[in-house]
Length: 473
Ligand code: GAP
Image (tube, rainbow, N blue to C red; front, top):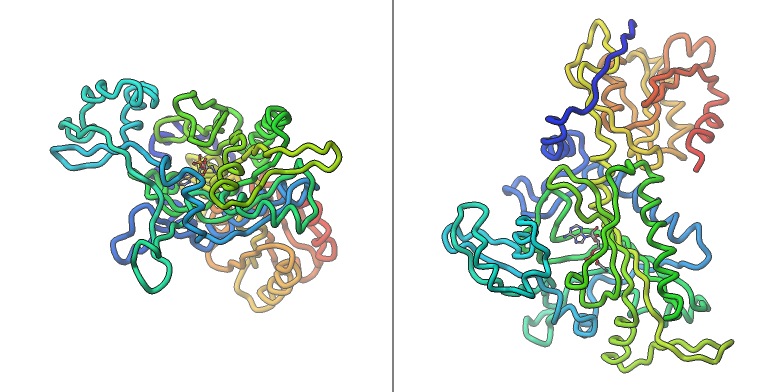
C-alpha cells in the first residue's frame, strides 16, 4: 500500500458548523441519539449509544479516580434521586431555584430573560437592578414585544405513591449534592472521618430548563459529578484556592486544549442563593464562544445550617482536639458529565481535508480523527484480520480473547484495511492490530498508532506487556 502525506486542519468555516457536524457525527457513529426519536423526539433528552456510553463511563471513571480513588480525604456516595420534599425547602430550591422567563406576545416563543440580556452585552444582574430596561428588548426570533419577566421554578415535581395529592408531592433532585448533605452525619460516623474531608457522588439531576438546547449542553435530565469538601470556616478560602486549579488541571490533563478553557468569576449579583464565592470553568463552544463547563463554589455554612434547622438534627461538628464546635463550610466542585462529554468530543474532533494517507483503492475528501485521550477512548484496541480467511480470523479471535478482559476491544473484518483504520480513527481508537498471513508464520502482528500512524511489528507473546505499557496510567 502506498502512503502519501496530506495536509490541512480545521478551517474557520469548519469551526462555524462544528456543532452541526458533532451532532450528526454523534448519531452516525453511535455516540448520542435524540431520545424517543421514533416518536419524533423528546426535547432536551438524549440517549447515549454504544460508543457514547463507553466514553461517558470513561469520563466518570477518570473523575472518580482523581476525586476518590487517589485520595485519602474523599469518600464516595450514591444517594437516591427522590428525597424527602423538605430537603428542597431547606436547600432554598423551592424559593430560589428559579430562572426569569419571558414570552413573545407575537410568536409565543419562550426565552430566559437573563440570556437575552447577556446577548445584548448586559450583565444578568441588570434585570434585578433595572427591570424597566427590559422593555427595550425585543423577541430575537420575530422582533415582537415580550412579556415582563416572571420567575419560573426549575425543580421537577412528581408524586410518590398511589395518591396524587399535596401530601404526595416530591421532586426529582435538582442537584446531586443535597443527598450528600443529608448523609453528612452517616458518612462521617460510619467512616470515622475528621474534618477536613470530602464526599463525592455521580448521578442524575433534573431541571425544568426554560430553554434547553445546544445538544447535550443544556438538558432537562443530565448527570452531575459533584464533590463536597467540609472544612473549618477559617480554612474555607485556602481550600477553595486548592480545588479551583485542580479542577481546571483535570480537563487539561485529559487533553482539552488550554486555549479553549478559562476561569470566570461570578459577579455578586449573579451568585446562586447558597454561594459566597463561585467560579466557572468555561469552554470555548462553537455556539457563542466561552460558556460554563463546570463550577467551583464556596457554599459557606448555608447547607448544613439550613438542614439542621429544617430537620431538627444538629449537623454542627465537634472537634475533639480543640474542643471547638462549629458549622462546617462547604467547598463544592460541580461538573456535568454530559457537558464534559460534549467538550471532550468537540475538542478531540479533527477533520483533515484530503485525508492523512491516500491509497489507490480508497481516496477520501475529508478524514476524521477523534484525538481522544487514550483513557477516554471508547474502544482501546481494534482487532483487524487482513482478510476473512478462516485461519486469519481464528488467530485474530484468539488475540481478542487474550486482550478483552483488560481492554474494550472491537473486531472488524469488513472493508479494506485502509477503510477500517479510518473507521477506528473516526471513533478515536488509539490502537489497531492487524493480523496478516505473515503473522501465522512469524507469530507477530502489526500495531498501528492512531495519532502517529506509526506501525510496530510486535511478537504475540509480548503483546500484553506492550499494551500494559501503552495504557499505563
Ligand atoms: N450543585 C451546584 C450546581 O448544581 P450548577 O452550576 O447549577 O451548580 C453544575 O451545575 C454543573 O452541572 C454545570 O457546570 C454543568 O456542567 C452541569 N449542568 C447544570 N445544568 C445542566 C443542564 N441543564 N444540562 C446539562 N448539564 C448541566
